[in-house]
Amino acid sequence: MRSLILLSGGIDSTTLSHYVKKKLKREIYLISFFYGQRHSKEIEYATYQANLLEPIEYKIVDISFFSNLIKNSALINKDINVPTWKDAQKEMPITYVPFRNLVFLSISLSYAESNDIDEIYYAAQRQDYIGYWDCREDFVNRLNELTSLNPKKKIKILAPFVNMRKSEIVKLGIELRVDYTKTWSCYKGENEPCKICPSCVDRKKAFLEAGLYDIE
Image 1 (tube, rainbow, N blue to C red):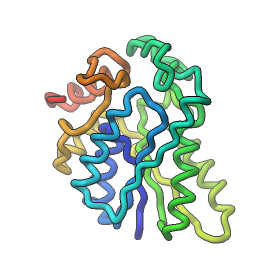
Image 2: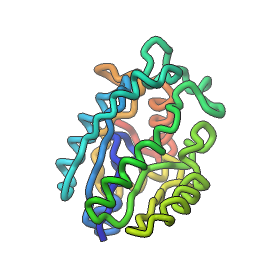
Image 3: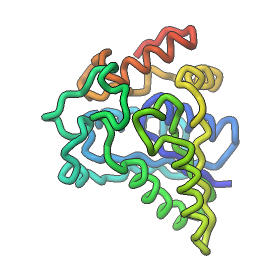
């Protein structure tokens, strides 16, 4: 069974990549996307993890044209301030990138079909449910309904963490011996994590809930 995993370099996708290879014993391919994100530093960490995991192939796909199309997301437009954790706890926060996951998964499906890959994994998790409609179980199910129309190859999209809290993902990663010092979460993408953006705060909360100390 061949599996393609979307790897951003953050906690969730890094844990998922180790999980699919080590627990599920799949032959893995990895794919990362540069989409003009202000925190493109995450690609460095994705590359580090990819080198550890030794996939059949690792692709970094440049779709930086996104930065010319998307003007209303703080993850792309540096003129928009990255919100605090509290300000981001709402439907469609300013950190939402319109249809990003659908674009990622569409490209991944094309790559998977051309490489005879059977399934695609992405790291949607429960705490993203409120703000991001493309991280919900219903999104995954409906996308699989769509891909089932393809008569050439039935590629399954899987999100095994979709009903898990980030702290549960961290605990799983510790079991898998994931080195979380080699992951990146901060939305601001500066030399050091800001510790106050939504992603930094979620990371801190996850380690606290798991009873662990995060050395980022």
